[in-house]
Amino acid sequence: MNKAKVRVKVPASTANLGPGFDSLGMALNLYAWIEMKASDRTEIQLYGDHMEQVPTDKSNLIYKVAQMVFAEAGVECPELEISVYSEIPLTRGLGSSASAIVGAMAAANRLIGSPLSDDKLFQMSSALEKHPDNVGASLFGGIITAYWDGSRAEYIRIEPRPNLEVLVAIPEFHLSTDKARKVLPEQVPLKDAVFNVSHTSLLVAALCSGRYDVIRHAMKDALHQPYRASLIPGMKTILDKATDYGALGVALSGAGPTLLALVDAESESRSELEHFLLSTLQGEGVPAQTMWLKPALHGVEELNHFDEQRSFLDNVRNSPEARL
Ligand SMILES: Nc1ncnc2c1ncn2[C@@H]1O[C@H](COP(=O)(O)OP(=O)(O)O)[C@@H](O)[C@H]1O
Ligand SMILES: N[C@@H](CCOP(=O)(O)O)C(=O)O
Image (cartoon, rainbow, N blue to C red; front, top):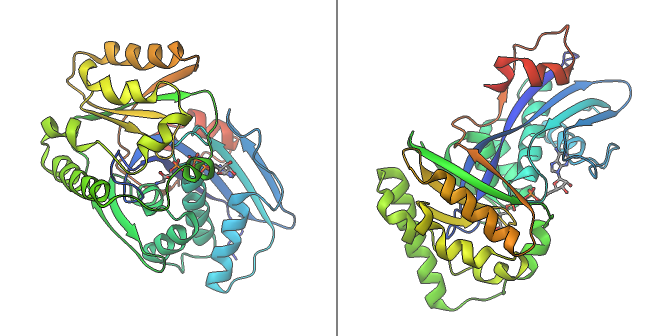
């Protein structure tokens, strides 16, 4: 067993991009950092503004996922020192659970000499999270088109074009993925299924080819957003009108409540769009914050340049290698 510390940096993700329900995702340059070390006693330290309700005992998701990796590899490592710093808001539709799963898998696998392949980690994380678009994006970076059929996941990674930016409006309230899935119907009309197949296909082609003019149409969805709109005041107005304020296209990020606009980096209406999103939510009594993000080109990666004299937190905050 490697007694050295392993550190990984893992990106957040946005799932669905509108119509690609459970199948189309993108990594975002918003990160969690995880440090893991075999130890005599389990100790979990959490840092960052979003971790209040995350457990620090062996029920912690990162601890549990690490144990799954050890079990799969046939290695015993019951006690771990884990430190986590996350800038990814939890239960807001920015893939925090997927990034925790992927980060834990990558760190635990590295700790025992990387016996599990990337594909194995993708299969395990897809089976656990059930959203291969979220976990695929956190594992491989970029834009991911994927499926998980209950036994196997497959994906293709698309390189995001350099001029693609992302504006997110993150409401202050939490909405768990579980709750946002419970409002979805068990069955949908064939016309809605056809709507989404055609829109997702067009969206993937638009993202690959740079045909940004069709994104406003291609990001429309009939499978989940219409049902989830009742959970997020202001969402319908934003989905209907954000393209009038300069968005290339707009969607609910994952299961919400975050709303996400794709924006051309050359756009001159950035501040109008930002103001529109914030004022629409605020007009509905929903305080929110906006962030300008970019697609993250790299998925989870090991960090080798930590300064051992500095604390984990200082390294994350101040080391350019950790932040790049
Ligand atoms: N860094 C983390 N460490 C441990 N658990 C985490 C971490 N990040 C997220 N989680 C778990 O994932 C849950 C959020 O998952 P979910 O409802 O799917 O929302 P999200 O859209 O943020 O993925 C949290 O309540 C917490 O249990
Ligand atoms: N496809 C899932 C995505 C959930 O993503 P999250 O970031 O909200 O956890 C869904 O739409 O339910």
